[in-house]
Length: 361
Image (cartoon, rainbow, N blue to C red; front, side, top):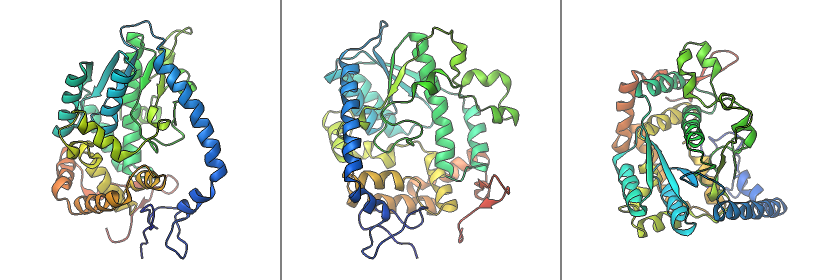
């Protein structure tokens, strides 16, 4: 029988989660006990906050723009763009990848760009290319499921595009709207490791060898070795990792500022790309839990999101995805676009080639 944590909403479906007699999960108990670790983390965060203030108050670029913002049109990127322009007086180039963005989110994008009078660069990727790799990855998911497998690959392409644009325009700084808990810590916390930007190519060589991409498409992926030895590469930073952050306050502020029509337009469930519903459906089927639950449970645990709100939202998300109704109707449309059947959404066991699934699906 599945249990749900009384504090953070994690369930026993999530690997490594267990409960005490009071119905509280081990992660919440560990959070309670980590007073010393939290003090160390806060000391590190304070140093990062000083670095952030110095970086934003004293831009180092010599180009037309001080920074590029990865601008998705969600609550965090809208609010971040406002702060960069109005509070730090930065010359910002807003970057949007125009793929599968819902109409409400496009409304946020247009409102915010117009309200702040910033330049907006829209990248329109190849739908054929995206269809090709999304279809392949959904049929060959890692053990962490569809959201992690597809979105992190997708993220490499998008952030590689932004890096290439920054190099082209000689922009020294890329700012992202990641909230605490995004992305995985091994990818980046406050700042992406400079070694990953300046020394590692992000070309998925294995997929080129499998024939998913042809050689001419290598230029679509970030490769610092295309630039000279003296090249200076941008930094990538995530301010919300060091600023005080509260999800509800960000949503309210974005609406108050006129950057979004109302709270529904900045609700993270509604503003995400529509293919995400297929990924959630796949993870509920194969993993047995909503893939966003660990991320938002962490925010709840740390007092940065409201448990009462996410209790309702998780129920609604799971219901819509499992039954393919309301927003879950996008699942059938996405399956049709990708020419896939539900039983082809598979987690591959690298050792045996077997497919892992949850009983009952």
